[in-house]
Length: 424
Ligand code: GLU
Image 1: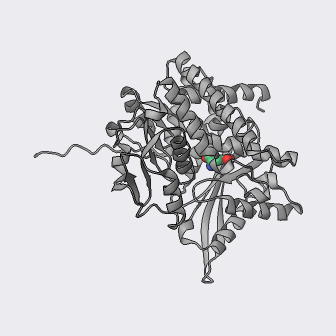
Image 2: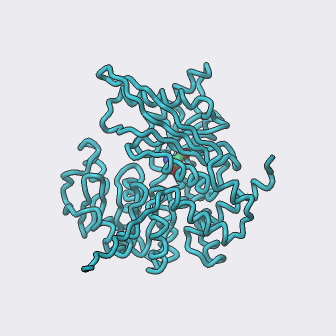
Image 3: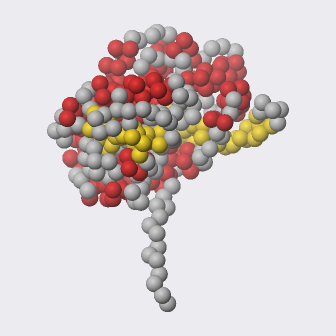
């Protein structure tokens, strides 16, 4: 028997397990009874469909699509639709549950859902994406509805796809139903402020947390992982409030400048460069792991699930993590983060600005009235600040990290509502 390499540490969790482990800890802290725990632990409904789509070359490809409704206890279910090659039912289930907790944390009258199609939108033409979006909507016609289940954008989808969904749904109803989907283009009843809403909410929660930690934004540094819709606006709005953003990244790599990256310039560069930061000037190219391990005050993971795991958590040096993405930290990494004394503003709080303005969009559609950008921003900032304070106070009251506190606030709300409504 010679020397044996120690077994590598593997982060075996999938996003659903990560979600469940926090749900369990918070339910125990809250003293949730078994009955309600059992109601909330699995999705209310899950639908998987096969979507045959004619490709531009005349061939037919079959895509797999899902919609998971985790809960409708607080109201119609709400959540985005993801177009990504990594989409699978486990991920969609986790994301749907996170929507339930997210809507409850910011106190908006929605349950949680999520959808996804396993595809690579980057390799598809606009026509192929349109046919896929319409096929998906048609397959979900019994599920979607303005008082039933309301989709929105997520990774790989945006206003363009939402317009097709709204149109596909409306055609089946024989009238325009714009409140069936949010995140639409402005001319179709989209809300002012919706595009930047998630990033704006990240900025508001980052500033609220920095206030508690007595970090002056004018003296603070930040690193943003993921420069899509969420990360780019979070970076821009924090820069406007004094923070020096020293590193940003996208799939092309990470970019670092210790004097700070000019975020508006980076956004413009990305827009003129096919959506990629590749070749960005005025910054040194580093790798993604270096960005996560950077000595900054605030780290903003704004790309996707499971980027901070037990494999790299030991390297993290930021004082504060504000989660722009859904599920960027695996549950196993939580423990080490807490031991290191890093404060985390969790996803279900930090990125809830998007669904909050989605709610405002739905309200405006139903009113047949358009709010000004000032009204949208003022109201969403207020909701985000109030939610932050509630979660912060709960974390002190229960002596738990903010992540568990956010779950406690959410589960408590959903459980109380369930008790009033009752089961069969
Ligand atoms: N996909 C976004 C999220 O994860 C927005 C959902 C919505 O607006 O309904 O929060």
